[in-house]
Image 1 (cartoon, helix red, strand yellow):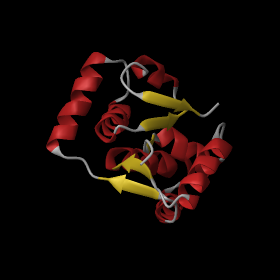
Image 2: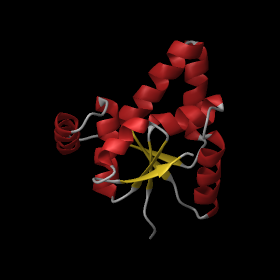
Image 3: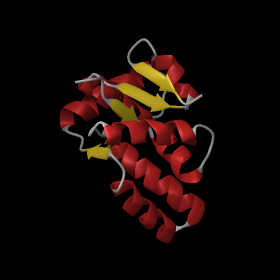
Image 4: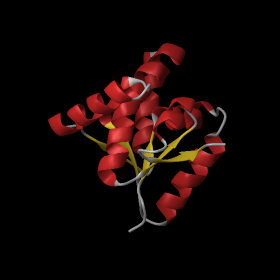
Length: 134
């Protein structure tokens, strides 16, 4: 099995709002679907996606976005106490947002690569492989 792709909320937001890098996200998801695979999204980053969309365009559109997200080849994974601790350790050692620490911890756990355009991830390129949107 090839290395899993772990999505940061940055990548999902880029796709939904057709922001910089959205076509790369679309291409990766299309390729995964063709291979019968799914990208991975931490439940924490799923929540981050929801609140950012809600802030930008309101609750109805945010709910609609969650429905659309369910149709994509993306597996939303829950967090457990061990992952919370791992994310907290990453947050304590690296200058990244707390939600980003969950994405990183999820990628480490699954031996996956993070797909993002968020420059904060430059700080963790020694910890995890980062696939940049541009």
